[in-house]
Figure 1 (cartoon, rainbow, N blue to C red):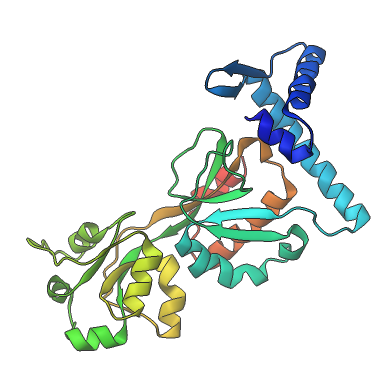
Figure 2 (cartoon, one colour; figure 1 turned 90 degrees about the horizontal axis):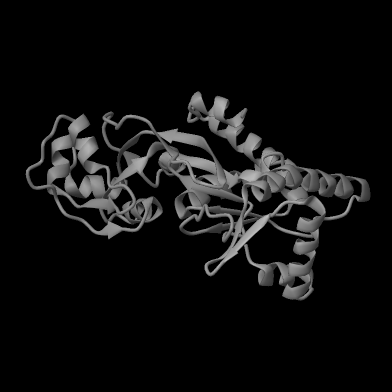
Length: 286
């Protein structure tokens, strides 16, 4: 949605891009963009054309790479939350057979699903809310339960759920969840212990590993730390399962071979862990 940035991409002037677009519109006999003080917007015809052309160009690119056996000239960019990147994706990335052929780059932060401004190919979207201009496919469900380090549990003498009313509880600013867990445990705290408010689940888990309090962990994110002994699960009580991550990409790239390959691998891994909701299959097949 920016002729200047498009011009930089292909090493020509913005004026040249504008003339090419105008020539294309004249040839097609339709308007592809509306131009207003806020910038460029795709018309309905422009969006339809984008959706039709993108998979054709992606397929052409993939075929050319296979025939020439050349290394990928561009990086396939994945943007994920810090927790998903550190606790799930990166530790498993060597299992993805297509990683070297695609040339993957993983970055973390607050995932933006506005693909008109986002230069990522795939975003690991928090939750499952639909996003205009993007395909959002629910990917991972998880319950939540308390975890802490063995040293913290021993030091605070934690033996039953009510003991959590007197210890430091680490709070997740994205979705705290403690009220739901206490309700599941049948406890109605009148004055829940306060603890530091941390930006996301990766920080709460890290703080719990460092003996700073009890974190309400997503099962999907905590399994490795529990298996390694860095964290201990407290009690059998857990919240109801809910979708925590979705696989998102621009609408016009539904048939991109690299996106499809990554999605299929991730869904297979998540299914093997018992974390894939059955509803995911119908969404992925659309």
